[in-house]
Amino acid sequence: MEQPGFSEKLAALPMPHDLPQLGQALTHLSRGILSMMSQPGYLPLVRMIIAEAPRFPRLGTLFFSTVTKPGLAIITALLQEAREQQIIADLDFDAVTHTLLGGLLTYVLTSLVLGGEEAQPPALDRADAVVEVIMRALTPLQLTLVFVQGGYAVGKPEPIDAKTALPAFPAAFRPIFRRAGMQDFVWMRSSGSEPVRA
Image (cartoon, rainbow, N blue to C red; front, side):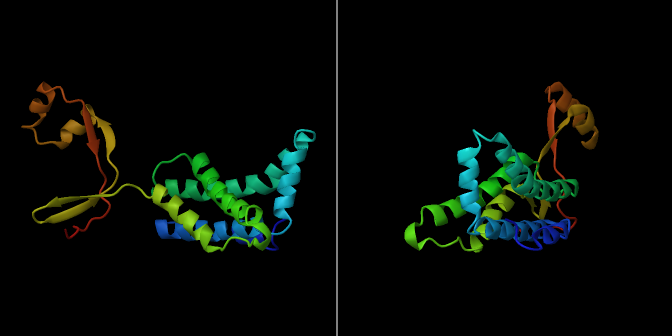
């Protein structure tokens, strides 16, 4: 089922250090998966496994462990590395990986199964489109605070407790916040040290 050398190519994918590298790695991986799913023997095999799984449960388990699980594991490893590098938003990896693979499978099913007699495999740019949607979900929220002298790019607001937040304010403001009963604060990391022109 797998294309020759596909596993080696996947194993050689560099771990991402920024969003563009992650997008490139996911695009490369998704194009390979879409090509594999578009092979003539893939859909008949999937049909047979779905039809026979109730009688032979081991078939489904074997297909999952040899075809689906490795793809999910590679995508999850890329996402975990990106999270450790703090370059992506904090999302449910299980949902992201299944959305990516499900999007690719949907293109194969609609192109080859519902395409009629003139059915053609989906174009590889469909993999690029699925990855673009995934990357938009993974991209951390970024805000720009604009002041008279310029703006500063900041990351996603994160909640912090009053004990941690209050020392960051000038001493004159702290009693005011305490009397007002303010307990909820947020902080935002700077996305860069240089001011942003607004």
